Image 1 (cartoon, helix red, strand yellow):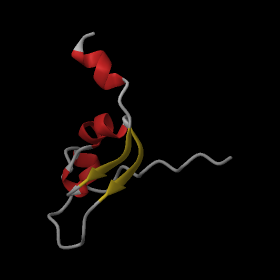
Image 2 (cartoon, rainbow, N blue to C red; image 1 turned 45 degrees about the vertical axis):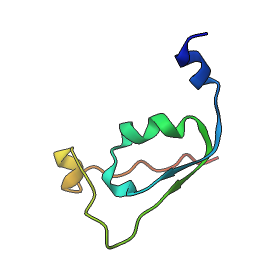
Image 3 (cartoon, rainbow, N blue to C red; image 1 turned 60 degrees about the vertical axis):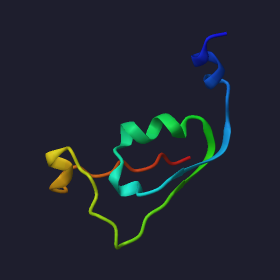
Image 4 (tube, rainbow, N blue to C red; image 1 turned 90 degrees about the vertical axis):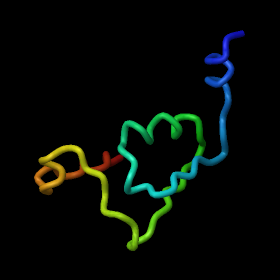
Length: 69
């Protein structure tokens, strides 16, 4: 059995992301796939958010609204 297939079957109860404002969404999604629940940790004294998209940084891109239903 190769190492990748063993890890793909592993599940975790929680994924805890410390300094959540500093991690990019693509980097965070990988670990979150293996957890049933997640906790994003941070406080208002942390460093400002890491934003790589200029439009998002300027506030031009708005977050999508959650689906209704």
